[in-house]
Amino acid sequence: MLYFYYKNNKGVKMAVKITDICINCGACIDECPVEAIVDDSENPTGEEIYYVYPDKCVECVGYYDTPACAEACPTEGCIVWDECKPGQTCREDRGEPGTPVIE
Image (cartoon, rainbow, N blue to C red):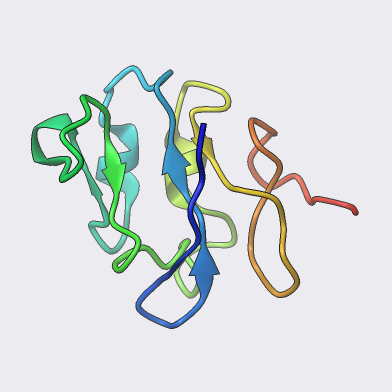
């Protein structure tokens, strides 16, 4: 699986990805405060999976203490981040939401 770093609309690096184990329940879409997540019918990559628009996602900074999409998701490890970078909100791939990464 490949991960790419993007800058969100606040210039912060982020790498949120919804993986192929997504069950398409819609919980993440309902909880996203900035409407950055779309279902598979609107995925610009053509993949049949939900998609996080990197230019819209703020990782819930200023809204919640932890990303609402990961908290709402019933499938453990479905919403992941790449490895932690200094100053970046993240967690280990397929770790528990809110678990800090210690390097």
